[in-house]
Image (tube, rainbow, N blue to C red):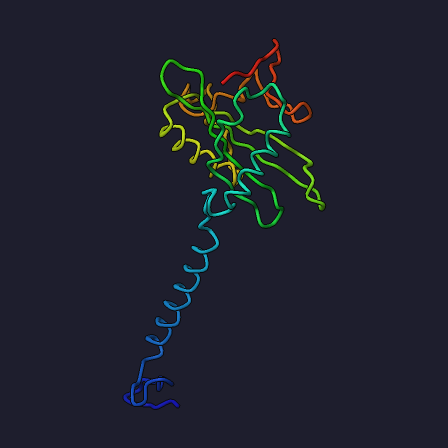
Length: 201
Protein backbone atom coordinates (compact mmCIF):
# COMPACT_ATOMS: atom_id res chain seq x y z
CA UNK A 1 0.00 0.00 0.00
CA UNK A 2 1.29 3.43 -0.93
CA UNK A 3 0.11 6.70 0.57
CA UNK A 4 0.79 10.14 -0.81
CA UNK A 5 1.37 12.91 1.70
CA UNK A 6 3.04 16.27 1.07
CA UNK A 7 4.41 14.98 -2.25
CA UNK A 8 6.36 12.24 -0.48
CA UNK A 9 5.71 8.55 -1.04
CA UNK A 10 5.51 6.25 1.96
CA UNK A 11 5.38 2.44 2.19
CA UNK A 12 3.77 0.33 4.85
CA UNK A 13 6.23 -2.18 6.30
CA UNK A 14 4.62 -5.66 5.98
CA UNK A 15 5.76 -6.77 9.46
CA UNK A 16 4.96 -3.61 11.38
CA UNK A 17 1.36 -2.46 11.21
CA UNK A 18 1.09 1.28 11.30
CA UNK A 19 4.76 1.88 10.60
CA UNK A 20 5.59 3.83 7.43
CA UNK A 21 9.03 4.04 5.85
CA UNK A 22 10.42 6.24 3.13
CA UNK A 23 11.50 4.32 0.01
CA UNK A 24 15.10 5.40 0.59
CA UNK A 25 14.93 4.01 4.11
CA UNK A 26 13.63 0.69 2.80
CA UNK A 27 16.36 0.69 0.18
CA UNK A 28 19.05 1.26 2.78
CA UNK A 29 17.66 -1.50 4.98
CA UNK A 30 17.60 -3.97 2.08
CA UNK A 31 21.15 -3.04 1.04
CA UNK A 32 22.35 -3.46 4.61
CA UNK A 33 20.70 -6.87 4.89
CA UNK A 34 22.11 -8.02 1.56
CA UNK A 35 25.60 -6.82 2.42
CA UNK A 36 25.41 -8.56 5.78
CA UNK A 37 24.31 -11.82 4.16
CA UNK A 38 27.05 -11.54 1.54
CA UNK A 39 29.67 -10.79 4.18
CA UNK A 40 28.60 -13.80 6.22
CA UNK A 41 28.70 -16.06 3.17
CA UNK A 42 32.07 -14.73 2.10
CA UNK A 43 33.52 -15.17 5.55
CA UNK A 44 32.26 -18.74 5.78
CA UNK A 45 33.72 -19.60 2.37
CA UNK A 46 36.98 -17.76 2.74
CA UNK A 47 37.77 -18.74 6.32
CA UNK A 48 39.77 -21.90 5.80
CA UNK A 49 41.08 -23.78 8.77
CA UNK A 50 44.53 -25.25 8.23
CA UNK A 51 44.71 -27.01 11.58
CA UNK A 52 45.17 -30.74 11.16
CA UNK A 53 42.66 -31.65 13.89
CA UNK A 54 39.94 -29.80 11.98
CA UNK A 55 40.48 -32.09 8.99
CA UNK A 56 41.78 -35.44 10.16
CA UNK A 57 41.13 -37.64 13.16
CA UNK A 58 44.15 -38.84 15.12
CA UNK A 59 43.94 -42.20 13.39
CA UNK A 60 43.83 -40.63 9.92
CA UNK A 61 46.77 -38.39 10.79
CA UNK A 62 48.86 -41.47 11.58
CA UNK A 63 47.77 -43.09 8.32
CA UNK A 64 48.54 -39.93 6.34
CA UNK A 65 52.03 -39.67 7.86
CA UNK A 66 52.64 -43.31 7.03
CA UNK A 67 51.59 -42.72 3.45
CA UNK A 68 53.88 -39.71 3.14
CA UNK A 69 56.79 -41.74 4.42
CA UNK A 70 56.11 -44.46 1.85
CA UNK A 71 55.91 -41.91 -0.97
CA UNK A 72 59.20 -40.21 -0.30
CA UNK A 73 62.75 -41.28 -0.96
CA UNK A 74 63.66 -43.73 1.82
CA UNK A 75 66.92 -41.92 2.58
CA UNK A 76 65.28 -38.55 2.86
CA UNK A 77 64.43 -38.64 6.53
CA UNK A 78 66.39 -40.56 9.10
CA UNK A 79 63.78 -39.88 11.80
CA UNK A 80 60.31 -40.17 10.19
CA UNK A 81 58.79 -41.11 13.57
CA UNK A 82 59.72 -37.68 14.90
CA UNK A 83 57.89 -35.82 12.15
CA UNK A 84 54.71 -34.01 13.04
CA UNK A 85 51.86 -33.12 10.71
CA UNK A 86 51.02 -29.56 11.73
CA UNK A 87 48.97 -28.04 8.87
CA UNK A 88 46.61 -29.58 6.36
CA UNK A 89 44.11 -28.41 3.75
CA UNK A 90 42.19 -30.07 0.92
CA UNK A 91 40.90 -28.08 -2.02
CA UNK A 92 37.21 -28.91 -2.48
CA UNK A 93 37.34 -28.38 -6.25
CA UNK A 94 40.30 -30.56 -7.18
CA UNK A 95 40.81 -32.68 -4.08
CA UNK A 96 44.46 -31.64 -3.90
CA UNK A 97 45.82 -32.12 -0.39
CA UNK A 98 48.32 -29.66 1.07
CA UNK A 99 50.36 -30.29 4.17
CA UNK A 100 53.20 -29.07 6.36
CA UNK A 101 55.50 -31.43 8.22
CA UNK A 102 57.53 -30.30 11.21
CA UNK A 103 60.91 -32.05 11.44
CA UNK A 104 63.65 -31.82 14.08
CA UNK A 105 66.83 -30.28 12.65
CA UNK A 106 70.41 -31.17 13.44
CA UNK A 107 71.61 -28.36 15.64
CA UNK A 108 73.41 -27.69 18.91
CA UNK A 109 70.24 -26.00 20.10
CA UNK A 110 66.72 -27.38 19.60
CA UNK A 111 65.59 -26.29 16.17
CA UNK A 112 63.17 -27.46 13.50
CA UNK A 113 62.46 -27.20 9.80
CA UNK A 114 59.09 -27.33 8.06
CA UNK A 115 58.35 -29.00 4.76
CA UNK A 116 55.32 -27.86 2.79
CA UNK A 117 53.95 -29.95 -0.05
CA UNK A 118 50.95 -31.26 -1.91
CA UNK A 119 49.45 -34.52 -3.14
CA UNK A 120 47.30 -35.07 -6.21
CA UNK A 121 45.22 -38.24 -6.48
CA UNK A 122 43.39 -40.02 -9.27
CA UNK A 123 39.74 -41.06 -9.18
CA UNK A 124 40.65 -44.23 -7.30
CA UNK A 125 42.43 -42.28 -4.58
CA UNK A 126 45.90 -43.37 -5.68
CA UNK A 127 48.65 -40.76 -5.58
CA UNK A 128 49.53 -39.28 -8.98
CA UNK A 129 51.80 -36.48 -7.85
CA UNK A 130 53.78 -35.93 -4.67
CA UNK A 131 55.64 -32.64 -4.49
CA UNK A 132 57.42 -30.82 -1.72
CA UNK A 133 57.02 -27.15 -2.53
CA UNK A 134 59.20 -25.59 0.15
CA UNK A 135 61.51 -26.40 3.03
CA UNK A 136 62.19 -23.71 5.61
CA UNK A 137 65.43 -22.74 7.28
CA UNK A 138 65.91 -24.23 10.72
CA UNK A 139 64.70 -22.09 13.59
CA UNK A 140 63.17 -22.54 17.05
CA UNK A 141 59.87 -24.40 16.93
CA UNK A 142 57.57 -21.44 17.52
CA UNK A 143 59.29 -19.45 14.78
CA UNK A 144 59.06 -22.31 12.29
CA UNK A 145 55.38 -22.88 13.08
CA UNK A 146 54.54 -19.22 12.58
CA UNK A 147 56.49 -18.82 9.35
CA UNK A 148 55.38 -22.13 7.86
CA UNK A 149 51.75 -21.24 8.60
CA UNK A 150 52.26 -18.00 6.69
CA UNK A 151 53.87 -19.82 3.76
CA UNK A 152 51.25 -22.56 3.83
CA UNK A 153 48.38 -20.13 3.40
CA UNK A 154 50.23 -18.50 0.51
CA UNK A 155 50.82 -21.90 -1.07
CA UNK A 156 47.21 -23.08 -0.74
CA UNK A 157 45.89 -19.88 -2.30
CA UNK A 158 48.31 -20.22 -5.21
CA UNK A 159 50.42 -17.17 -4.46
CA UNK A 160 54.01 -16.74 -5.56
CA UNK A 161 56.51 -18.09 -3.02
CA UNK A 162 59.66 -17.06 -4.88
CA UNK A 163 59.62 -13.74 -3.06
CA UNK A 164 60.42 -15.70 0.12
CA UNK A 165 63.40 -17.58 -1.33
CA UNK A 166 66.85 -17.18 0.18
CA UNK A 167 68.13 -14.91 -2.59
CA UNK A 168 65.52 -12.35 -1.56
CA UNK A 169 64.89 -13.00 2.14
CA UNK A 170 68.14 -14.61 3.35
CA UNK A 171 67.70 -17.35 5.96
CA UNK A 172 64.29 -16.09 7.09
CA UNK A 173 61.79 -18.28 5.27
CA UNK A 174 62.60 -20.77 2.49
CA UNK A 175 65.92 -22.60 2.21
CA UNK A 176 64.83 -24.88 -0.66
CA UNK A 177 64.16 -24.60 -3.53
CA UNK A 178 66.79 -22.16 -4.70
CA UNK A 179 68.89 -21.54 -7.80
CA UNK A 180 70.76 -24.82 -7.29
CA UNK A 181 68.37 -27.19 -5.53
CA UNK A 182 64.89 -28.30 -6.60
CA UNK A 183 62.41 -31.06 -5.79
CA UNK A 184 62.38 -33.92 -8.31
CA UNK A 185 58.79 -35.21 -8.53
CA UNK A 186 59.96 -38.43 -10.24
CA UNK A 187 62.60 -39.35 -7.67
CA UNK A 188 60.53 -37.62 -4.97
CA UNK A 189 63.47 -35.96 -3.30
CA UNK A 190 65.43 -32.73 -3.30
CA UNK A 191 68.28 -32.80 -5.81
CA UNK A 192 71.11 -30.46 -6.74
CA UNK A 193 71.98 -29.27 -10.22
CA UNK A 194 75.71 -29.38 -9.49
CA UNK A 195 76.55 -32.02 -6.89
CA UNK A 196 75.05 -35.04 -5.07
CA UNK A 197 72.76 -33.89 -2.33
CA UNK A 198 72.16 -35.77 0.88
CA UNK A 199 69.28 -34.15 2.70
CA UNK A 200 69.91 -34.17 6.43
CA UNK A 201 67.76 -32.83 9.22
